[in-house]
Length: 156
Image 1 (cartoon, rainbow, N blue to C red):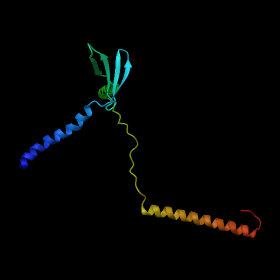
Image 2: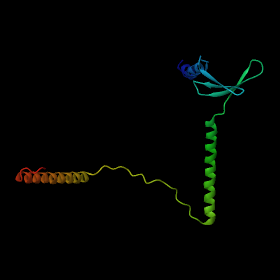
Image 3: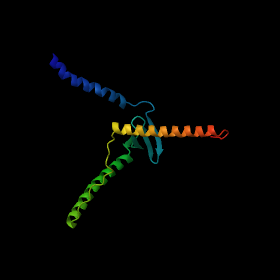
Image 4: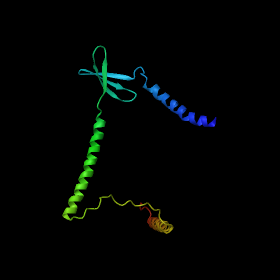
């Protein structure tokens, strides 16, 4: 009995997984928007973003073909440029080997420095410095107050 459940569980999960997908593919009112173009119209699927070019066929048929998306063309161009870059780097290395030139080391950014917290001694010396500054400032203020007390009417 348990073995039968183990065999049926994947089948049940597969059926359940396809249910939401089939519900999404049904035409929903307002799902498509149409835009007239020369010789037909563009159909935009507002749920998936897919664009199709539709033209009148024979009889009452309308033929729709997926539009060539610019992103697909860009992806192909990027892949072509990557392959060309690899080929050119290999050619540069080959020519440098023939010419006896040492290949340049790969250019890297500045070395990543790991952030380190200051040590206890560093913190203590910084606090001592601030304390000395504060004492000097306080002493100067006292001197100014004493000087102004000796000379009445002198503004600070």
